[in-house]
Image (cartoon, rainbow, N blue to C red):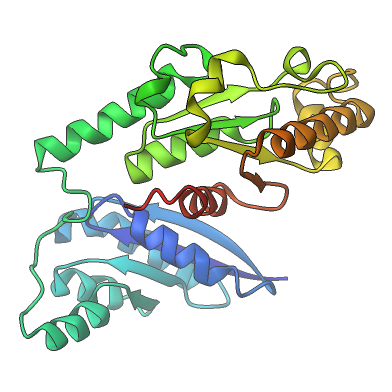
Length: 272
């Protein structure tokens, strides 16, 4: 398999560069990618470290490195491009094209997407993250009435990382509730009473038993908790509960956290 060095370089957090870049890279299965990240590169001095790594990759690798960049300062883009890498400027041409259509030039403001200078936006962001941390694995249920979404699922089924991703990237107050053998026991599993008032905010995650067993084996190898039979039983009862209670569900078996989050957003119409 061919190896290729990939750099995400940005004057902000680099989240945009990573999201777009990694989405594009999924189209090239023939390559093994080595990823390096350089966020908050806002002047020539800060760019030196990224350029040094680019030059090493240029000298050592068979193929020139690829850079996904999101600079608003064209001089920084030129600095990075001088190394001879394949630079994909995610803000340059799209911003220019949009500006031509709108009849105004784009604002040259670094870190604009994160809006870190706006205290209200920053506070909303922090509130969402703190909420998701406090309401992880049903550690607290007293704030469920303030949740934008409550995610259900089995242990090791992807609840926590999905909630954290939603709070970090979309500022959503995302709680999660683990459905254990206690909740799923009996011939007809029922929704826990603590959740009955919030059915319009519930979304369930489902995962195939084999994959769930593999994940649990890493945590507790050889345990009944991680056995394929236990996982089959739990998943079967979970599917029944979702169907019987009319709860939307998403299969997480082969999906990345980013993909799961997008599906959650679409399913629950949380973009408004």
